[in-house]
Length: 95
Image 1 (cartoon, rainbow, N blue to C red):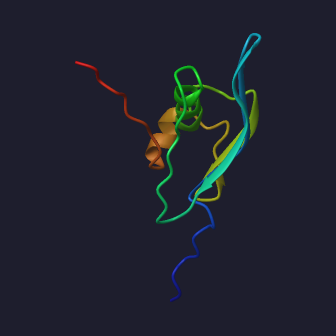
Image 2: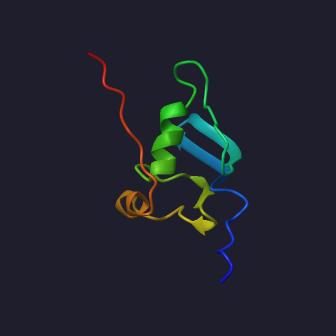
């Protein structure tokens, strides 16, 4: 029996946008993470990195755009369901 086909991207973010009133925290962000890749998100304080991770994990709902995991649309999926699919985040603990 042939092995199941993997999608081209494990995680795909397309045109993700999040606004807080007049402040745009994430603006039309798109990227894909493929098997075997290591991807970093860098930027100064206030650049929207934490907001991006909250959007991907489902802790916040984007104003626009989509998120897919293993080719499956997750944009409106609850964070609990995303965790069951293997997608979650950790929090930084400062001591």
